[in-house]
Image 1 (cartoon, one colour):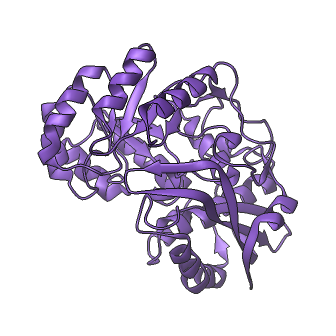
Image 2 (cartoon, helix red, strand yellow):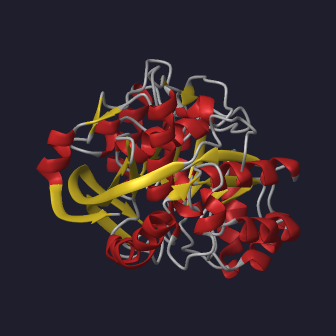
Length: 381
């Protein structure tokens, strides 16, 4: 990806990289169809250049196999043994074309995102520009939607829905799984029929469950996210043909290659583009361009991440091509604390206003990083 700007095409000579592995407790456990998580285990990537400019990125898979086969342990190994040693040898790097070099290195996309994000921040700090300006994106408020996990009872779920509706989130997404689908959706529709509502299955169903989705088709949902396994693209095309509700690809939209397969099989009408999952800011924007050309709608998802990665993704989410609210929410919605200042917040209309300023507009709190650090690895050219 290249905007053609001489500012964007500047080279970055990396002098050192420090990895900070941090663990921040969630505000409450988050349960989806395949597990529960109570802490955010993330890897923060601190880059410094020959000329003393600093930038931060975040590598942010979830623990276990919560959303993908990549875990923080896998990313830590890939960063320390593969990516950082190779990039230090290259040294002369251009953030806008780094994704092409990263594609040649056999490592997970989360790790690549952490490095690329740090280098974009370096370039922003050096030039005094915001990330959205460097990426050629016009600044705008970002509409925020809430993602709500699975609870033991429908009553608990309804309490959470009412809470976040009162916080003015612009749409509600609930997690579903076999046996927890029609009843909670029906209950929400009865209690708050006017809200924009969608469901996320996290690949918990198969094509044999099509009757469930035909029933869900009657509830006026915005979309049904990732009903089938990531690799079941042919089957998703069959299911989409049976429904009026759009299917949204998430786990299956992990790269340009899989996106092209989704387009070919008409397996989704909406694409959830997660910067972490696809390998960085550049890859996310390339996927957006490809999806829009195919007539698909898009929005920016989250793993969720801590504030560094969330803030960078917000600059991508400002792009006018994203037409649905993002899953990026207020910092305090997810975590007891965060590593950025100020925290990410939503206003009374459900929008996130990204601070003006250099880079992401948010500052990394080194004190908070040190407070939550569980491991450190240092590399120097």
